[in-house]
Image 1: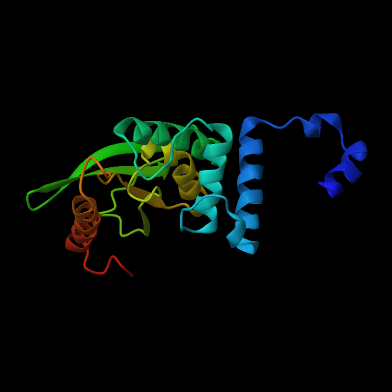
Image 2: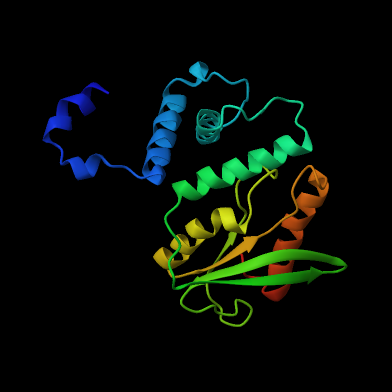
Length: 201
């Protein structure tokens, strides 16, 4: 804060006008850094990594009325998902117009898993092209997160690395059991191995 006040007179006023996206990103980095250095100072009772604690604090800062206690109702979970999505999408870069997203349902035995193929400019068929891929399991502790929340980052990843990203849209808790969620994760990997037993390389 002292450094900011010291240099502020020498900074162009246009640079001081931050978008909400920048403010959220800056707060997240500050909270995360503080949590890494001083983990015992976190006001909440949750035990998790520094970045997740920072997200928790951001949600509490922007939406203090949101109840994140241990006794969550379905409405609490929906509100948490909604506000988490708003904050996370503000942290990620905007999605490029050249980013393509295709919706797919893959079958393993009797189970179906929802997937999205994400790539810059054109989507290659991963089963035929012998290309490298990123199998992306989004964050959210199996409770929140979806393609809308993470596609901006995945598009950025695809463009930066020139690679196909496979986004796994696994079932979420508490609507489904954790066992069903993990089953989706394992089934996707089995589908990839069935298509190419060396795909892990």
